[in-house]
Amino acid sequence: MYKQFFKRFFDFFLAFLGFIIISPVFLLLLIWLSIVNRGAGAFFFQERPGRGERIFKVIKFKTMTDERDASGKLLPDAQRLTKVGKFVRSTSLDEIPQLLNVVKGDMSLIGPRPLLVHYLPLYNDMQRRRHEVRPGITGWAQVNGRNAIGWQQKFEYDVWYVDNVSLSLDIKILLKTIQKVFKREGISSDTSATMEAFKDN
View 1 (cartoon, rainbow, N blue to C red):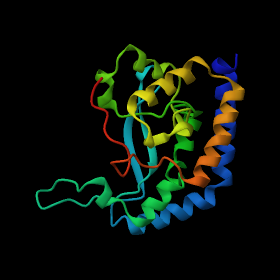
View 2 (cartoon, one colour):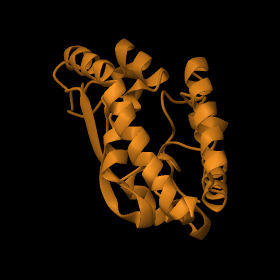
View 3 (cartoon, rainbow, N blue to C red):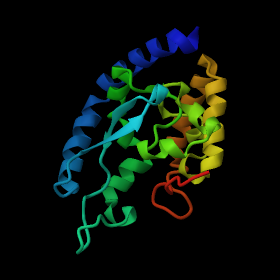
């Protein structure tokens, strides 16, 4: 009952209420990032697969510039990540606009993180099961390592969550997320400013 009905009700209520409460922070970050991103804008939009692999546009605060090299190719993430962007990312403030995705019904507060569309053909049957539920702003994999864990472990955590969705588990993940944000753990992998690309099985 929770997974099929009440989860969506709580998502909508908490996301809507939360967005109203933190709207002053939202406006401050909007202005701040518009300035430091050097014309790249304050928002980042990207297509991601949601529940049932339905494509939607995720919205986040933009933490990088659009600086390019002499050939017109984007510079590496680590070079485009601004000091302000690094702070916003490490405190997970870049996730705030996704509350609007939750209100719309594209996402949930808790669930597997929405990944890139071009990863879809690379998934095996087990990994594809992460799309049986709405993707989340935070999830079981995020509170158990986030970007500091490997892809296989991340997928295993995602599928475990799909099989064990409950109100008590969501509350546990939410509380652990708050703890992780304050500790700023798992923001980067060992070799990247964010997370290495998923290539294949």
